[in-house]
Length: 293
Length: 293
Image 1: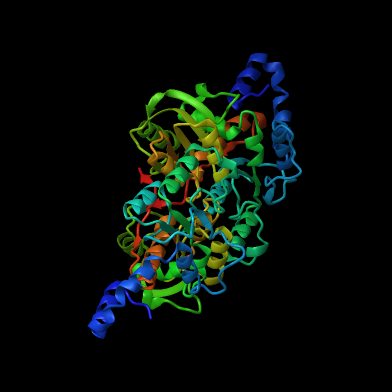
Image 2: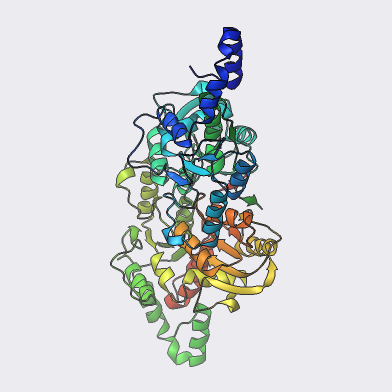
């Protein structure tokens, strides 16, 4: 039984005063929970976890320390780390790398001033950063997809047999752009194709799964619109450009990598909170770093 | 001796009427030049060419046919192919892939409707597409860099000892954005950092050489501004975001992959024209496929 903190208090009150004597002891136990114990608990919801091969490793800090607060985010940026410290949270769960490459290897930039300063900031605040990428995508439904569908108000269109394809009531690419900007907090984005094109078979591939996966998906499912996080500009965007020039009804919305998956980490905070009860879980959006000029 | 067509005519006239009888024969010889002969001639200017391992292979058509006209471009899009056909040009030299992946392999999408239609369009017009990526970057100076420096009016800042780093008169990131948009034909682009930041040590990495190369370069050269074509959004843009948040004077302009290298293929047309004399070389910009909303 997973209860939110509010539900937990209500349930306790319903049970009656006699049960309340147990609350301080429970709260004490909870506050002694270590970061590793939180991680182990989370992994019980991931089929096949823990994985022997994964990028979802600890990037900084000591997970045997008691958890004081949890932050979920897309990128553990310098700002997100400072925000976590101000929240007295010593555990950041980040979907993407901390040190600017997929495996977070720093041997090639060990003496770099940015890497060194970021490590010092993390150490000073005794913050553990754990990447949660492969695991959240392995959850069923994929936690990122759940978050994106929830944020877009499209959760009723989810199809467990083909999660990346949904059918929406017929609309236009322009209308989907308007919805995505409003609901995902996006100021600017890029489109390939025709904004006035009708669409109802929509592909959803948040993040950057790579051109081959995106294009194979396009070939197989033939969505009239694909929403993705990021493209390599010699791959999927050129494929859609040519498809459109050849007269096919195909369009692409490039949401931005961070915006396309942030709802997943927001969803994770709401999913995790009831499981850690008196430990506060806060979603801190890292947004994207770009100024669009 | 490389002459433009105009110079060729002038030189002939200077030699006098007696020489003119040879012109038709020469013109005939030139028009019989095959595409393969043009390729072989071009490769004489590339140190170490031909390479045994390269993506710069023929992507379509028969190079033994006589060349009727040449088009240089970034991407041999459906529109660029149609434009070449309308120009009676049967040889497209493209910097980037034709079939949406770095090696142009199509075994995984052989029956794809876009790939099939594009191949049919090329075959119908008997057009040879040759990729010219590794070779132009191997020229000294790198032909793409030459084109970019020329287009930006920065050719006098070229430093053969460290070609990707230039020193410009102190200015602001905003001023460089304005210059790049005006001179490279860019409507919109993305910046990381502070538009009002002063800059004079500028890094130039057109295209998408990858995050490790970009970040290693940033670590080694410490430019206060990097101009690049494209980033993976979990790599270089996050590095610059953190550097900026840590108080370092670092900024990034993401020009867009196509816009960042198009000047190289424009330069190539002007470089190639005098060498093929009566074969018309036309640069057809493929631009980028994005609508910025």
